[in-house]
Length: 286
Image (cartoon, rainbow, N blue to C red):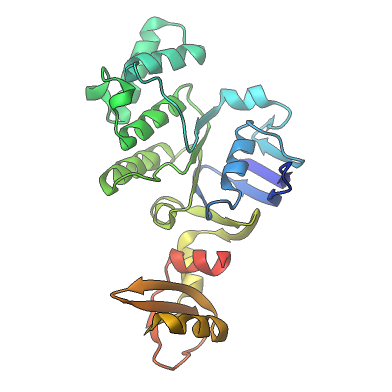
């Protein structure tokens, strides 16, 4: 169990990134969904002991995270949004190096571990390739291999699929699903589909606050029968924004599709739509 209580953080420039965050997470994949600048990375870095909050507490099992940082780091696997690699080092060499840093000094044990990790992330056939030659998706999978060293009980991945092509995104998400069954995995992202496909529990964060929390499927069920759409001219969108509870407006085939939240049929040519997690997301951050 990871318990976050009353966590707040304000940066020296006056930006309040976190505002009294309260969350409790158990084993499995937890999705933290929010737009850029919502406070996701600040929260992830704080949990990972890379920065201190102004107030609040974080407890992971019997570890007081803010007071026992080294203890948390022993059981933590962390893949930040951006991580550097040594370009003229192979994946195999780098994993051996990280394993030694993690205290795995027995050469035979380390060799077996590195081989198993490279196979798990489907990089064994590329183990002798310099990291500089890896694609974006390969680097992300290598990052997960690094994070898995030391048998972590808590894994944090921050915006892991941003910039990946659909095939690499699928590979990466399948990998996350495999490792997230018996430990706490926090997936921080602005990609709604990643949370919808991977997570049984989630929260939406906006402007430093948790604005929604729950099981994605149940959240979608709660919105069923309340989403309506209509095709309109682009110049009409402001009027619909003023007169309806607008969830989303997006360009489609040369005109705009507006989606509104209404308990009953708004009439005026609107058609019923099946609710999606995207509807929940935009209704909460707008």
